[in-house]
Image (cartoon, rainbow, N blue to C red; front, top):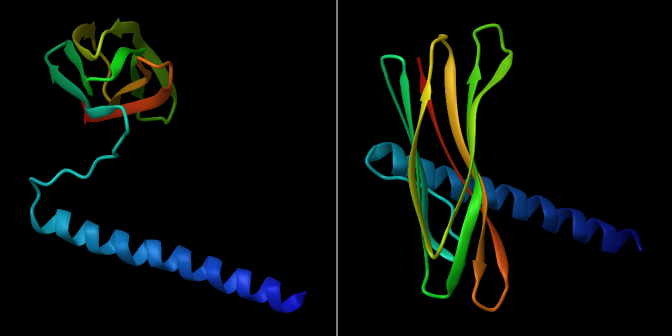
Length: 143
């Protein structure tokens, strides 16, 4: 019984370190070409990108989710939060959005305090046969 536990532990360590090594290779490739973007992959959508732009006292909050042809609905919440210099978190604005196989929206919020602004989208893509998949995207800017 101890031998099986030992084999399982060794296998787990190999899988963990193997993941770290492959992530390191990917990270080095991304650093060598800063234009590369490493992003998660989903079964139901081709891309999910959040875009935050700060200009003066305005925040432009965009989300672009492109579903495959079998997607019938994409919906979720787009949130803008402020992480203040003292570490406290403040909700700035939140929008519930829904669309068909594509969801492209740009919303505007007012910003006034310095700190780190984070735009995040947490949503769901639903296929025509009723299967769902969680979709996330975020962007962060310092103000």
